[in-house]
Length: 387
Image 1 (tube, rainbow, N blue to C red):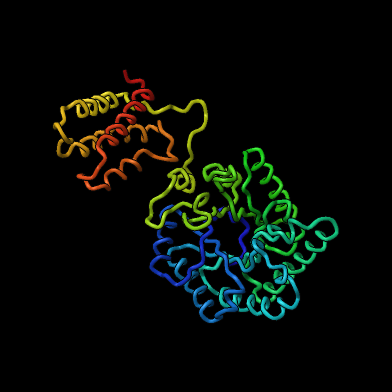
Image 2: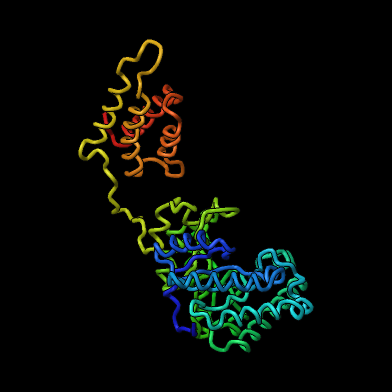
Protein backbone atom coordinates (compact mmCIF):
# COMPACT_ATOMS: atom_id res chain seq x y z
CA UNK A 1 0.00 0.00 0.00
CA UNK A 2 1.35 3.41 -0.89
CA UNK A 3 2.29 5.97 1.74
CA UNK A 4 -0.67 7.75 3.34
CA UNK A 5 -0.60 11.22 4.89
CA UNK A 6 -2.55 10.03 7.91
CA UNK A 7 -2.63 6.58 9.54
CA UNK A 8 -5.18 7.35 12.25
CA UNK A 9 -7.45 4.79 10.55
CA UNK A 10 -5.31 1.93 11.91
CA UNK A 11 -7.05 -0.06 14.65
CA UNK A 12 -4.55 -2.85 14.92
CA UNK A 13 -3.32 -5.62 17.16
CA UNK A 14 -0.01 -7.38 17.49
CA UNK A 15 -0.51 -11.00 16.57
CA UNK A 16 1.73 -14.03 16.29
CA UNK A 17 2.98 -15.27 12.95
CA UNK A 18 0.92 -17.93 11.17
CA UNK A 19 2.72 -21.24 11.73
CA UNK A 20 0.72 -23.49 9.43
CA UNK A 21 -2.49 -24.11 11.39
CA UNK A 22 -4.81 -22.42 8.90
CA UNK A 23 -8.01 -23.33 10.72
CA UNK A 24 -6.72 -21.85 13.98
CA UNK A 25 -5.34 -18.78 12.23
CA UNK A 26 -8.66 -18.12 10.51
CA UNK A 27 -10.51 -18.52 13.81
CA UNK A 28 -8.27 -15.92 15.44
CA UNK A 29 -8.66 -13.56 12.50
CA UNK A 30 -12.40 -13.94 12.91
CA UNK A 31 -12.10 -12.82 16.53
CA UNK A 32 -10.09 -9.80 15.40
CA UNK A 33 -12.52 -8.85 12.65
CA UNK A 34 -15.47 -9.08 15.06
CA UNK A 35 -14.18 -6.13 17.10
CA UNK A 36 -13.09 -4.00 14.14
CA UNK A 37 -9.38 -4.84 13.86
CA UNK A 38 -8.09 -3.73 10.46
CA UNK A 39 -4.35 -4.45 10.73
CA UNK A 40 -1.92 -6.98 12.22
CA UNK A 41 1.61 -6.25 13.36
CA UNK A 42 3.56 -9.51 13.29
CA UNK A 43 7.10 -10.63 14.11
CA UNK A 44 9.26 -12.40 11.52
CA UNK A 45 12.84 -13.60 11.84
CA UNK A 46 15.91 -14.05 9.63
CA UNK A 47 16.78 -17.09 11.74
CA UNK A 48 13.51 -18.82 10.83
CA UNK A 49 14.06 -17.84 7.19
CA UNK A 50 17.56 -19.31 7.32
CA UNK A 51 16.31 -22.70 8.59
CA UNK A 52 13.93 -23.34 5.67
CA UNK A 53 13.72 -20.47 3.22
CA UNK A 54 11.00 -21.79 0.93
CA UNK A 55 8.69 -23.01 3.70
CA UNK A 56 9.16 -19.75 5.61
CA UNK A 57 8.30 -17.56 2.62
CA UNK A 58 5.25 -19.67 1.86
CA UNK A 59 4.01 -19.23 5.44
CA UNK A 60 4.54 -15.46 5.24
CA UNK A 61 2.62 -15.33 1.98
CA UNK A 62 -0.24 -17.38 3.41
CA UNK A 63 -0.39 -15.21 6.55
CA UNK A 64 -0.66 -11.95 4.62
CA UNK A 65 -3.09 -13.39 2.06
CA UNK A 66 -5.42 -15.00 4.59
CA UNK A 67 -5.52 -11.88 6.78
CA UNK A 68 -6.40 -9.75 3.76
CA UNK A 69 -9.32 -12.04 2.93
CA UNK A 70 -10.79 -10.66 6.16
CA UNK A 71 -9.88 -7.07 5.29
CA UNK A 72 -6.94 -7.03 7.72
CA UNK A 73 -3.61 -5.65 6.51
CA UNK A 74 -0.22 -6.79 7.79
CA UNK A 75 2.74 -4.77 9.01
CA UNK A 76 5.61 -7.30 9.22
CA UNK A 77 8.48 -6.74 11.63
CA UNK A 78 11.69 -7.81 9.91
CA UNK A 79 14.11 -7.74 12.86
CA UNK A 80 13.57 -7.76 16.63
CA UNK A 81 15.53 -5.69 19.15
CA UNK A 82 14.15 -7.73 22.08
CA UNK A 83 16.57 -10.51 22.90
CA UNK A 84 19.00 -9.08 20.37
CA UNK A 85 22.09 -11.08 19.51
CA UNK A 86 24.63 -8.28 18.93
CA UNK A 87 26.29 -10.42 16.24
CA UNK A 88 23.29 -9.60 14.05
CA UNK A 89 24.59 -6.03 13.79
CA UNK A 90 27.94 -7.15 12.35
CA UNK A 91 28.66 -6.63 8.67
CA UNK A 92 29.34 -10.33 8.29
CA UNK A 93 25.78 -11.23 9.33
CA UNK A 94 24.32 -8.48 7.18
CA UNK A 95 26.18 -9.61 4.07
CA UNK A 96 25.72 -13.34 4.56
CA UNK A 97 22.17 -13.44 5.94
CA UNK A 98 20.46 -10.10 6.58
CA UNK A 99 20.59 -8.68 3.06
CA UNK A 100 19.37 -11.87 1.41
CA UNK A 101 16.58 -12.23 3.95
CA UNK A 102 15.39 -8.64 3.44
CA UNK A 103 15.55 -9.00 -0.35
CA UNK A 104 13.39 -12.12 -0.15
CA UNK A 105 10.88 -10.44 2.17
CA UNK A 106 10.61 -7.31 0.04
CA UNK A 107 10.28 -9.36 -3.14
CA UNK A 108 7.50 -11.38 -1.53
CA UNK A 109 5.59 -8.52 0.08
CA UNK A 110 5.83 -5.46 -2.11
CA UNK A 111 3.01 -6.43 -4.47
CA UNK A 112 0.76 -8.08 -1.87
CA UNK A 113 -2.53 -6.15 -1.61
CA UNK A 114 -2.74 -6.85 2.14
CA UNK A 115 0.74 -5.52 2.88
CA UNK A 116 0.72 -2.19 4.77
CA UNK A 117 4.33 -1.19 5.51
CA UNK A 118 7.70 -2.56 6.64
CA UNK A 119 8.62 -2.32 10.33
CA UNK A 120 12.39 -2.63 10.02
CA UNK A 121 12.97 -3.46 13.70
CA UNK A 122 10.93 -3.78 16.85
CA UNK A 123 12.33 -1.82 19.82
CA UNK A 124 15.99 -1.41 18.80
CA UNK A 125 17.01 -0.15 22.25
CA UNK A 126 15.13 -2.71 24.37
CA UNK A 127 17.95 -5.19 24.99
CA UNK A 128 21.01 -5.53 27.27
CA UNK A 129 23.36 -4.57 24.43
CA UNK A 130 21.98 -1.03 24.53
CA UNK A 131 20.41 -0.77 27.99
CA UNK A 132 23.36 -2.05 30.02
CA UNK A 133 26.06 -0.16 28.15
CA UNK A 134 27.31 3.11 29.63
CA UNK A 135 29.31 6.14 28.56
CA UNK A 136 31.39 5.79 25.41
CA UNK A 137 30.45 2.13 25.03
CA UNK A 138 26.76 3.03 24.91
CA UNK A 139 27.43 5.59 22.20
CA UNK A 140 29.35 3.00 20.18
CA UNK A 141 26.53 0.49 20.55
CA UNK A 142 23.88 3.03 19.53
CA UNK A 143 25.97 4.06 16.52
CA UNK A 144 26.30 0.44 15.46
CA UNK A 145 22.57 -0.11 15.83
CA UNK A 146 21.78 3.03 13.84
CA UNK A 147 24.13 1.98 11.04
CA UNK A 148 22.23 -1.31 10.88
CA UNK A 149 18.85 0.43 10.81
CA UNK A 150 19.86 2.97 8.18
CA UNK A 151 21.38 0.25 6.01
CA UNK A 152 18.09 -1.64 5.91
CA UNK A 153 15.97 1.46 5.47
CA UNK A 154 18.13 2.33 2.46
CA UNK A 155 18.13 -1.22 1.10
CA UNK A 156 14.35 -1.52 1.31
CA UNK A 157 13.95 1.82 -0.46
CA UNK A 158 16.24 0.57 -3.22
CA UNK A 159 14.17 -2.55 -3.65
CA UNK A 160 10.73 -0.97 -3.17
CA UNK A 161 10.23 2.74 -3.74
CA UNK A 162 6.45 2.55 -3.30
CA UNK A 163 5.65 1.02 0.10
CA UNK A 164 6.39 2.89 3.36
CA UNK A 165 8.80 1.88 6.10
CA UNK A 166 8.88 2.51 9.84
CA UNK A 167 10.82 1.47 12.94
CA UNK A 168 8.87 0.52 16.09
CA UNK A 169 10.79 2.46 18.72
CA UNK A 170 10.55 1.67 22.43
CA UNK A 171 10.07 5.31 23.48
CA UNK A 172 9.44 8.66 21.76
CA UNK A 173 12.89 9.70 23.00
CA UNK A 174 14.40 7.11 20.63
CA UNK A 175 12.84 8.56 17.46
CA UNK A 176 15.92 10.56 16.46
CA UNK A 177 17.85 10.08 14.21
CA UNK A 178 15.82 7.43 12.36
CA UNK A 179 12.97 9.84 11.69
CA UNK A 180 15.02 11.02 8.72
CA UNK A 181 15.16 7.51 7.20
CA UNK A 182 11.57 6.29 7.66
CA UNK A 183 8.29 7.28 6.03
CA UNK A 184 6.12 6.74 9.10
CA UNK A 185 7.22 7.55 12.66
CA UNK A 186 6.37 4.86 15.19
CA UNK A 187 6.69 4.70 18.97
CA UNK A 188 5.46 2.50 21.81
CA UNK A 189 3.69 3.56 24.96
CA UNK A 190 3.23 1.52 28.14
CA UNK A 191 3.23 4.41 30.61
CA UNK A 192 1.48 4.46 33.97
CA UNK A 193 -0.65 7.61 34.12
CA UNK A 194 -2.55 10.04 31.94
CA UNK A 195 0.05 12.75 32.60
CA UNK A 196 2.93 10.56 31.42
CA UNK A 197 0.99 9.20 28.43
CA UNK A 198 0.04 12.73 27.36
CA UNK A 199 3.70 13.80 27.57
CA UNK A 200 4.71 10.78 25.48
CA UNK A 201 2.23 11.66 22.74
CA UNK A 202 3.25 15.32 22.83
CA UNK A 203 6.90 14.41 22.27
CA UNK A 204 6.13 11.91 19.50
CA UNK A 205 3.82 14.38 17.75
CA UNK A 206 6.44 17.10 17.93
CA UNK A 207 8.96 14.83 16.17
CA UNK A 208 6.40 13.87 13.53
CA UNK A 209 5.60 17.55 12.95
CA UNK A 210 9.30 18.41 12.73
CA UNK A 211 9.84 15.88 9.93
CA UNK A 212 6.43 16.29 8.32
CA UNK A 213 5.64 12.59 8.60
CA UNK A 214 2.64 10.58 9.83
CA UNK A 215 2.70 9.01 13.29
CA UNK A 216 1.53 5.70 14.72
CA UNK A 217 1.69 4.04 18.15
CA UNK A 218 2.66 0.49 17.22
CA UNK A 219 2.45 -1.03 20.72
CA UNK A 220 0.30 -0.15 23.69
CA UNK A 221 -1.55 -1.62 26.69
CA UNK A 222 -0.14 -3.75 29.49
CA UNK A 223 -2.02 -4.54 32.70
CA UNK A 224 1.19 -5.16 34.67
CA UNK A 225 2.55 -1.73 33.72
CA UNK A 226 -0.50 0.21 34.94
CA UNK A 227 -1.39 0.82 31.28
CA UNK A 228 -4.88 -0.72 30.94
CA UNK A 229 -6.45 -1.20 27.53
CA UNK A 230 -9.31 1.23 28.01
CA UNK A 231 -6.92 4.02 29.08
CA UNK A 232 -4.22 3.46 26.47
CA UNK A 233 -6.63 2.95 23.57
CA UNK A 234 -8.67 6.02 24.52
CA UNK A 235 -5.48 8.10 24.50
CA UNK A 236 -4.72 6.89 20.98
CA UNK A 237 -8.24 7.87 19.88
CA UNK A 238 -7.98 11.24 21.65
CA UNK A 239 -4.70 11.99 19.85
CA UNK A 240 -6.01 10.79 16.46
CA UNK A 241 -3.10 8.35 16.18
CA UNK A 242 -3.42 4.89 14.66
CA UNK A 243 -2.42 2.11 17.04
CA UNK A 244 -1.60 -1.56 17.56
CA UNK A 245 -2.59 -3.08 20.90
CA UNK A 246 -0.46 -5.89 22.30
CA UNK A 247 -1.82 -8.53 21.71
CA UNK A 248 -4.81 -10.32 20.19
CA UNK A 249 -4.68 -13.67 22.01
CA UNK A 250 -4.39 -14.59 25.71
CA UNK A 251 -1.70 -17.25 25.77
CA UNK A 252 1.85 -18.19 26.67
CA UNK A 253 4.35 -15.99 28.51
CA UNK A 254 2.31 -12.80 28.09
CA UNK A 255 -1.08 -14.37 28.87
CA UNK A 256 -1.22 -13.02 32.43
CA UNK A 257 -0.83 -9.38 31.43
CA UNK A 258 -1.84 -9.05 27.76
CA UNK A 259 -4.52 -10.21 25.37
CA UNK A 260 -8.13 -9.84 24.24
CA UNK A 261 -9.31 -13.37 23.42
CA UNK A 262 -8.98 -16.87 24.81
CA UNK A 263 -8.66 -19.58 22.14
CA UNK A 264 -12.35 -20.44 22.54
CA UNK A 265 -13.38 -16.87 21.69
CA UNK A 266 -14.30 -15.78 25.21
CA UNK A 267 -12.71 -12.65 26.68
CA UNK A 268 -11.11 -11.91 30.03
CA UNK A 269 -12.38 -8.35 30.32
CA UNK A 270 -15.18 -7.01 28.09
CA UNK A 271 -13.94 -3.45 28.67
CA UNK A 272 -10.88 -4.20 26.51
CA UNK A 273 -13.10 -5.19 23.59
CA UNK A 274 -15.41 -2.23 24.19
CA UNK A 275 -12.43 0.15 24.19
CA UNK A 276 -11.22 -1.20 20.88
CA UNK A 277 -14.65 -0.46 19.43
CA UNK A 278 -14.56 3.07 20.84
CA UNK A 279 -16.69 2.62 23.98
CA UNK A 280 -15.23 3.60 27.34
CA UNK A 281 -16.28 3.34 30.96
CA UNK A 282 -17.60 6.57 32.48
CA UNK A 283 -15.16 7.78 35.15
CA UNK A 284 -16.59 11.12 36.22
CA UNK A 285 -18.58 11.97 39.41
CA UNK A 286 -21.89 12.11 37.50
CA UNK A 287 -21.71 8.35 36.92
CA UNK A 288 -24.96 6.62 37.98
CA UNK A 289 -24.37 3.48 40.00
CA UNK A 290 -26.34 0.28 39.43
CA UNK A 291 -29.26 -0.29 41.82
CA UNK A 292 -29.80 -4.08 41.85
CA UNK A 293 -32.77 -3.90 44.26
CA UNK A 294 -34.69 -1.17 42.45
CA UNK A 295 -37.45 -3.66 41.56
CA UNK A 296 -37.05 -5.77 44.68
CA UNK A 297 -35.23 -8.58 42.91
CA UNK A 298 -32.31 -8.64 45.34
CA UNK A 299 -34.69 -9.16 48.27
CA UNK A 300 -36.54 -11.89 46.37
CA UNK A 301 -33.31 -13.68 45.47
CA UNK A 302 -32.06 -13.71 49.05
CA UNK A 303 -35.41 -14.84 50.41
CA UNK A 304 -35.59 -17.64 47.87
CA UNK A 305 -32.20 -18.99 48.97
CA UNK A 306 -33.16 -18.63 52.64
CA UNK A 307 -36.25 -20.81 52.13
CA UNK A 308 -34.28 -23.50 50.29
CA UNK A 309 -31.67 -23.65 53.03
CA UNK A 310 -34.32 -23.80 55.78
CA UNK A 311 -36.20 -26.76 54.29
CA UNK A 312 -35.78 -29.87 56.47
CA UNK A 313 -33.18 -32.40 55.36
CA UNK A 314 -33.38 -36.15 55.34
CA UNK A 315 -32.01 -37.68 58.55
CA UNK A 316 -28.75 -38.88 56.95
CA UNK A 317 -28.32 -36.98 53.67
CA UNK A 318 -29.38 -33.95 51.71
CA UNK A 319 -32.52 -34.25 49.63
CA UNK A 320 -32.21 -35.23 45.95
CA UNK A 321 -31.49 -32.15 43.81
CA UNK A 322 -30.70 -30.05 46.89
CA UNK A 323 -27.36 -28.83 45.51
CA UNK A 324 -28.88 -27.91 42.15
CA UNK A 325 -31.64 -25.92 43.83
CA UNK A 326 -29.07 -24.05 45.92
CA UNK A 327 -26.83 -23.38 42.93
CA UNK A 328 -29.77 -22.12 40.88
CA UNK A 329 -30.70 -19.72 43.67
CA UNK A 330 -27.06 -18.71 44.05
CA UNK A 331 -26.85 -17.98 40.33
CA UNK A 332 -29.72 -15.48 40.65
CA UNK A 333 -27.78 -13.73 43.43
CA UNK A 334 -24.46 -13.88 41.56
CA UNK A 335 -26.01 -12.44 38.42
CA UNK A 336 -27.14 -9.44 40.45
CA UNK A 337 -23.71 -9.08 42.08
CA UNK A 338 -21.73 -9.33 38.85
CA UNK A 339 -24.18 -7.41 36.69
CA UNK A 340 -24.19 -4.51 39.15
CA UNK A 341 -20.38 -4.66 39.53
CA UNK A 342 -20.64 -5.28 43.28
CA UNK A 343 -17.87 -7.91 43.37
CA UNK A 344 -14.30 -7.83 42.02
CA UNK A 345 -14.32 -9.42 38.58
CA UNK A 346 -10.71 -10.53 38.89
CA UNK A 347 -12.25 -13.67 40.45
CA UNK A 348 -15.93 -13.75 39.46
CA UNK A 349 -18.17 -15.82 41.77
CA UNK A 350 -19.66 -17.38 38.64
CA UNK A 351 -16.36 -19.24 38.15
CA UNK A 352 -16.87 -21.03 41.48
CA UNK A 353 -20.52 -21.60 40.65
CA UNK A 354 -19.57 -23.31 37.39
CA UNK A 355 -16.90 -25.39 39.14
CA UNK A 356 -19.57 -26.80 41.46
CA UNK A 357 -21.88 -27.52 38.52
CA UNK A 358 -19.14 -29.50 36.79
CA UNK A 359 -19.10 -31.97 39.70
CA UNK A 360 -21.57 -34.87 39.30
CA UNK A 361 -24.59 -34.08 41.46
CA UNK A 362 -24.22 -37.13 43.72
CA UNK A 363 -20.63 -36.14 44.52
CA UNK A 364 -21.13 -32.44 45.25
CA UNK A 365 -20.05 -31.08 48.67
CA UNK A 366 -23.51 -29.88 49.68
CA UNK A 367 -22.54 -28.18 52.95
CA UNK A 368 -19.75 -26.30 51.19
CA UNK A 369 -22.17 -25.23 48.44
CA UNK A 370 -24.69 -24.04 51.04
CA UNK A 371 -22.00 -21.91 52.71
CA UNK A 372 -20.87 -20.48 49.37
CA UNK A 373 -24.43 -19.57 48.38
CA UNK A 374 -25.14 -17.89 51.69
CA UNK A 375 -21.87 -15.97 51.50
CA UNK A 376 -23.03 -14.61 48.12
CA UNK A 377 -26.39 -13.69 49.64
CA UNK A 378 -24.68 -11.78 52.43
CA UNK A 379 -22.56 -9.87 49.90
CA UNK A 380 -25.69 -8.89 48.00
CA UNK A 381 -27.59 -7.98 51.18
CA UNK A 382 -24.84 -5.58 52.31
CA UNK A 383 -24.05 -4.15 48.87
CA UNK A 384 -27.67 -3.65 47.85
CA UNK A 385 -28.70 -2.48 51.36
CA UNK A 386 -31.26 -5.27 51.75
CA UNK A 387 -32.54 -5.84 55.33
